[in-house]
Length: 148
Image (cartoon, rainbow, N blue to C red; front, top):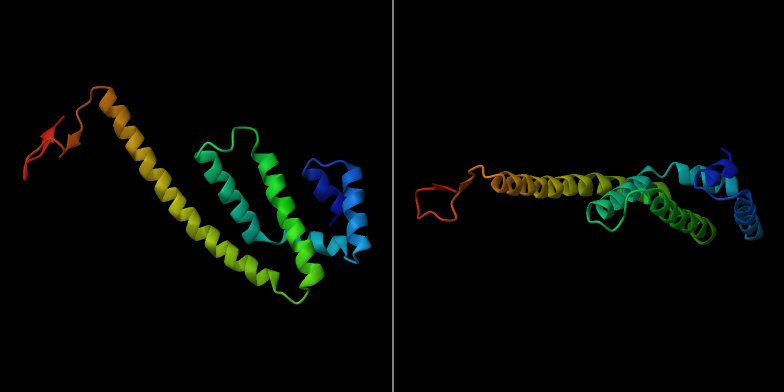
């Protein structure tokens, strides 16, 4: 595992990599070990993906900027991992990551459901605007239904 290659994949220049490695060495941390741990955090990565997808869907993240958002979120995770390694070395970060993965799975299903409901509503509105009659109870007296 090459820390230089990992940080370059985020679009950072070699100088920034040198600064990061120097800071880690200054505080007595092994940069390669932290990088190896960061890469294995599948739950954290899934949460970043989910958050970015939700932000895209809601219009906060525009096309072409998701990579930058991902770099920022992952940098924050990397910093948190550094702090955890330095100040809480016995904390089981992989157990937390497993919990994050389960959360991301559940939240992902909920998000997909919400997106599906919103999409269905949008399609229904489009069909109605095209002049196609849609089934509705809104103008009907119980128990009959009317066509609009």
